[in-house]
Image (cartoon, rainbow, N blue to C red; front, side, top):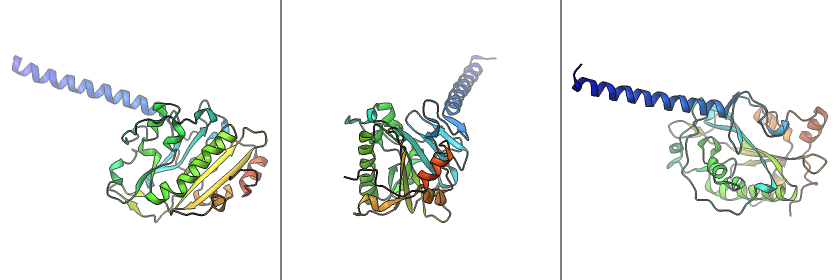
Length: 269
């Protein structure tokens, strides 16, 4: 074989080797982050994660999520917000990145361009300021949903700030949030990312002795109404989403907490 022939062949073999190595490393990373039908994340309490209607549960360092391919977003994102997580540190805002840990492929951030909708975080970046890695991780596309700017920066932002207040006051809370996903929603982008008509947030305080649970259901529009007017029972959100929240709780406790829409034990000041 002549030198003219050998060099192109070697170049091709090297390129194949590099591709195979990258594929292997990418696959290992996906396997590390993805657990089929998982209900418990290592290092958290058993009741941390809801059920998944899709069986596609992804674990990242700062949060877990259940991805719904049909709607190209998470049906829920769940995480623990400890008092020690709260920080005033300001990290540089990174670019959004496609979440490569999603086996069915997460939607690309370009679907949002010129759509009129913001890339609304489900786990807020402000809740993960305890490290740059945790903060930047919230900019994965599996953690966003289409939201109007007025809603995102308005009543939804007020609720996120209140959750941080409760995390500080109660020495930590568990948070589950997402859009209500159903057939017939409007979509954006070439991958048809669904635009939820409603968003929910469920907050569990299990650190102060008696467990308490608070659920919010918000229509996808800005509002000046007080936050307590959006409180509903967790059972109501389960009816709308088909998700079983905190299934690891003792049955009687779960039934009592999820049936209640009372907010008298939460401070709305």
